[in-house]
Image (cartoon, rainbow, N blue to C red; front, top):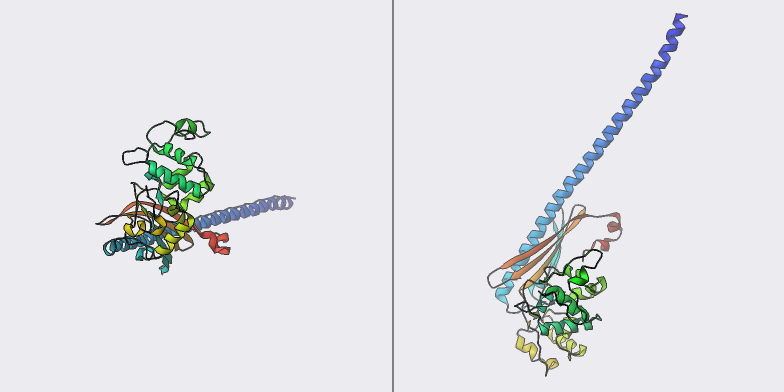
Length: 331
């Protein structure tokens, strides 16, 4: 009888021990998998950080190259055109761990929105009329000009008839006030009443925001920018100006103003044949990601200075990027 009792007691104990052992193994497995997963994530995170810093270093090198080219160009030329060395895009170049490409853009071949204000903060009527013509040529409402001026000027008086000052913006669901100062970045335009995504998209190739009043470089200006120079300037006349400009451009302002297409016309806005402001866009592919550096450069007789840099963090490629390479474009 006693041997039977021992056997019946040992069997449940063996079962409990087996369950306990399985539980311990399961817990150890879960812990091990979790630790391995976290380790892999940490390794990837560290690699991404290193790739991001490496990409930024490559981009800074490309920016330095652009500064050297622009400084050399200023010594060699009195005017800026598309056949200059700076205008040649940097094709993808193999570097350790990836590719670097870039381009320099003349930021004065566009209308500077801050030109709408004079040097003393007053409204520049010639530039206002110019901007109205540019808007109309692009199929946009001319009232956008006065709304933008209300955003820029120092006062809080609404320009007649359809301007927009603080009272318009304070009634929004997410209220804010007008800047009442020159713009610092083109993205600010989306805050101004009427400048929706469609309007801004149409304007972007033809406008810029610079820290001072600047003339329009007619050697790099777009068709729309040139046609807005005068109300009586027809699209056919602009075509003649661009054809005769070619890649070599107009070497001096007198050559441009003496063109037959401008006969009898007086330009009210300031134009020129050289530029002081340039944007550098550098794209870098390192490891499994892509990064971009945007730099605004200001050139004078002595040097080329950096006004600002906008650094886009490393973006990892997705399956969609691999399937459709063009989807990775940041333009």
